[in-house]
Length: 357
Image 1: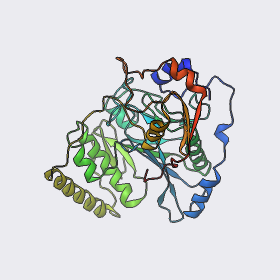
Image 2: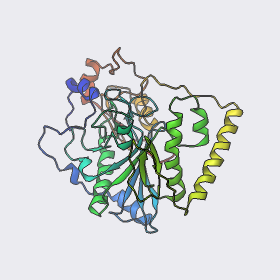
Image 3: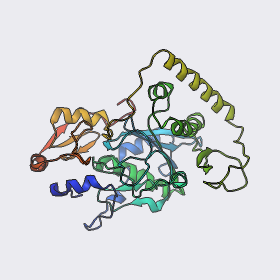
Image 4: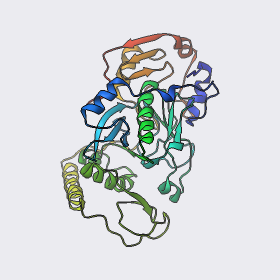
């Protein structure tokens, strides 16, 4: 991938994962790495078994779950997100620089093997829920690099892994997989901390799907009616995203466990609020986030240099969320950054992004 210093502003202004003008590469055909294959074998999974992705903005983490021999999904690997933009909360309209939140079905047609950002997977925004609520935008991606204007940037090395895992799942017969994008891990601590957010009702709705997956380790069936997500609805009719919800009931297999979890979480959230859990700011002024693996690497090496870490390469034009912005919200860059783009720093001590990062 060639991202010229003079095109940095354009890179940040649009996150479209568009087709590259360079000759078609073979990066999309890279095999699964030996380390991933070893993890797959160790966890009793198949190389082409189905996958599911979960994204947590505040933690800046992307999880890959994969079906194992039991038929349920188990966590395969957690990848640190190099950059996402905006605030916690859903994407509302084109140009708001918000990374989306919600549950998105990914089909083979949303895979971009020839992206300007190394490789890309289109989230499919807007989905049925987004469209029913009048939300606009398009070409919102998970891609390489470490710059975002509404997307999730993973570094080139990590998107190569993620793309290969998705490709193999499709080759194995999976028709579509879910991306479940959340503002944060939906724990009582986080719900108490973010209680003043105007998005809380939306997040509580998403939590219903989060809880079902936490209990069952199976992707929930997702529908939309009355402009709301509904999960595991047992109904013979197709639901209308803007129409009235018909009578339906979820399956009984795990419903009691799901309800009990919801009740426990509600009580614990209320207890934490009574104990005085501080409320988080409702905005970070659109600064977005970056996993602390990358923030620490930049703090050590400085900006304006290419930094190689075990979790992926941070390009010279990458900036952590604390970087000052101009009046129109674009990241301020300068000749010093462009001139430094040929220098590289190795930061070996940063790990590959486990769930503990």
